Image 1 (cartoon, rainbow, N blue to C red):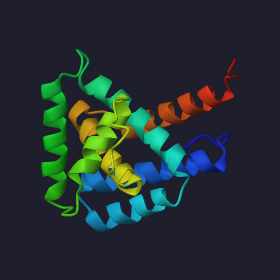
Image 2 (image 1 turned 90 degrees about the horizontal axis):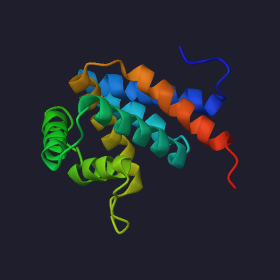
Image 3 (image 1 turned 180 degrees about the vertical axis):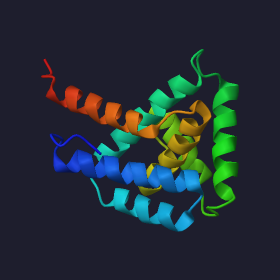
Length: 156
């Protein structure tokens, strides 16, 4: 499913994100916990970069005219309310942290536990992909590709 020339780690991240998003879309709490548990075992910084890139691109797709404050509030409310129906431990603060982090406006003094942000970013990803009616795998592939390109660019 993922390019065979990708190193092991990006393939594992892609597979885990894909599984977690599928579980979120299905409202399957057990599968979601298992998939996000697998994400937690992978390098946190890389997982965070991938999820932020996916959320950012999905926001652009779902809101092609720009994201207003009202749009952001609606996304947050829809994600939290939708997830609360099948995932009672959904962390509203983590959803806010995932959204603001993806937008590059995260509060540096935010005390949200880093471990709670990837599951929240997965919930955002599932919601935004549904909202935009797009396949999430394309976004996963592009996010990992962009990160790989950025890592190969030599800094001055």
